[in-house]
Length: 229
Image (cartoon, rainbow, N blue to C red; front, side, top):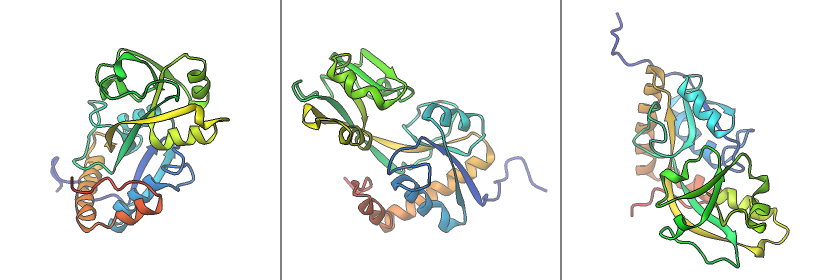
């Protein structure tokens, strides 16, 4: 008979919720993030079942156990979800502002008016942040900057490049690298998700050691986040 503490047999499917990040976790299943997670789980017999939701909703689904994990969280963002030992990628965090403004640094960032997408909680990961505005969607960011309603917009490099590609005059803007934040799957706090989290850590350790993930990052032209420093 199974005891309460016994491990759950490894499920054949992992249910994941993620925002639709272009070229990363796109709703149709393509992108760097999905490729990495398929490489982690599928050889171990676990298929990905993906749901596309806004980030805060994806977190909520994991908190309620409606999915096994939420994709692309920063460490310990919420206390009621479980974080594995391994991250699966690193977010390259940039500040986007007018080219006519001084380039910010991590030390000076806190003295500016900042903006980012609601739910991203950069105030917890960047020093001395005092004034920030959370936006519901990215569509109005460039006009927000040109109309001086914020000094800098903070986001991951892929998102900032996506915005710049749609700017009428990209030379009006400048992006400045400010931080590297490891990206995690945050797992639901239940036996099934714990089993999947243990599998994730075990597989990541093997894949990083073997270098098998390197070609995936090369294919998407993104920096490989696991080089020994």
